[in-house]
Image (cartoon, rainbow, N blue to C red; front, top):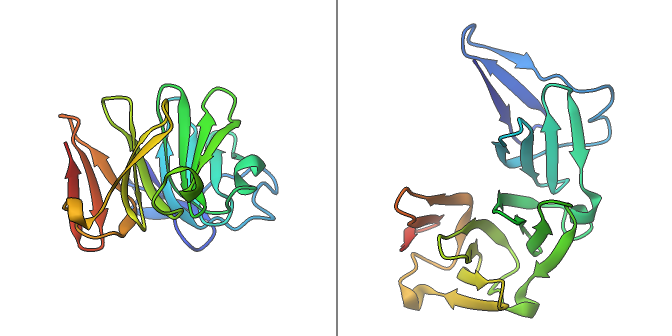
Length: 193
């Protein structure tokens, strides 16, 4: 009966759907004292933890029961900004302003940093989402990329391939029930079948 909201003000708030009033979130003592969180995207996982993409601390995990935050300095060392994330069966994928970070979901250790140096069309990554064929799709400031991470191959798509434009929007992606992937950009939508 409560919605968690976050934004650029640095904090998190709960909206109580019954009372129609905003409430303070529970934070463990001094857990946010040295941090300002500017949120771009958040998702509650099956275990009840909420993961957040932020502009200042990359990925942050929040346990709303204990009020504790977990920070990941290994990701912050690559990029302070995380725009979006997704988990697949093996990996966590972090869309950052400095490339795509491939992380072991089991250990939270970095496996690889994908960038223009190894095939991406741009290092500013807006969204990342797996397809049903074992590939990862990436939207960026330089179009779309289909990443075959097993073989290390990046297939780039541009306006010549029918994209709405080369620039996409942060966290603007969706996979429908049929497995089609949708990306939102500054000039409209693109669908990957």
